[in-house]
Amino acid sequence: MTTTLPEPEERGRLTTSDTTVERIAAHAVTEVEGVGGTASRVLGVTVGGEDPDKGAAVTAKVSGDTATLDVRLSVAYPASVGETTGAARRHLLRRVGESTGLTVSRVDIAVTALHSGSAGTRRVR
Image (cartoon, rainbow, N blue to C red):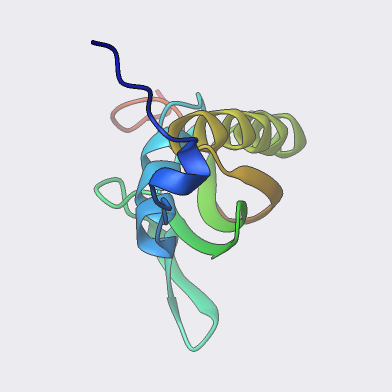
């Protein structure tokens, strides 16, 4: 005896929260080479440098089956800011879409700092 399932829209609805999309995007952006955490800000002014233990900051807005992302991150020096953010944007569009089934219509990226791409400190001899 075989039972057929009703069409997906008749079985129920899936809702993905803004917070869920933010977490998925924050994790996905760590997969992009040359991208680091966001710099700390006080009253809109950057203070200090990038916090290596803090990931990129992502804010998401989900409306129906579409999401928009606002991302704050740092870029490894001397990498091209344009190329690195372009790679991050493309990666986020693909990965968030794959993970959530949502269409990501827009990814706004603010680069808050440049960080050293090498481990340790460099010294002049």
